[in-house]
Length: 186
Picture (spheres, rainbow, N blue to C red):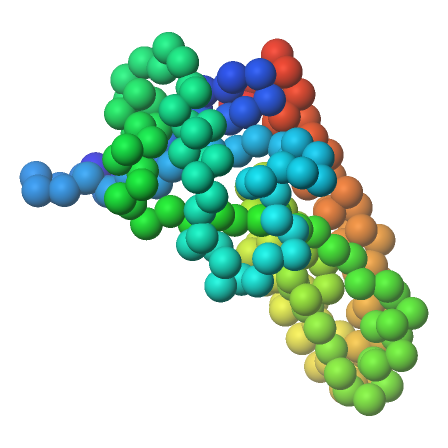
């Protein structure tokens, strides 16, 4: 198997996703995602201020939610098995998005300081386009610098800023759309 296969199941505002990344005679590499919106400030699975090192600290409430998934068919029933998941390497990813203020960027540009990619306009992991946007940033920034040295940084920020804001807005909208009930994720 050379290509990735992805299957998804949506239950109300929750999405279960399974990816088969690689298969050999001895092994199958599976990647899964349990995606749902935060359930308010008391949500035990929503810890927006936790450190990056806390990604592997999985609250018991996560396993309770998995146990409460009723009527799953294969392969979801096998993958989203709380007992099995408790022995796997499970990471709790937070989806954050930002767009740094243009005035702050313009203030640093004359000093030759530049930022690109997620350091300026981080997009959500799911539904995001961050890696592609960062590559585009690098290519376009190189063009600006090649034409006008570091003086081009400020103009580059100005030229790209609307695109960054719009990209983050679109990706946040995609996440909101994914979580709407009765909307297909495919």
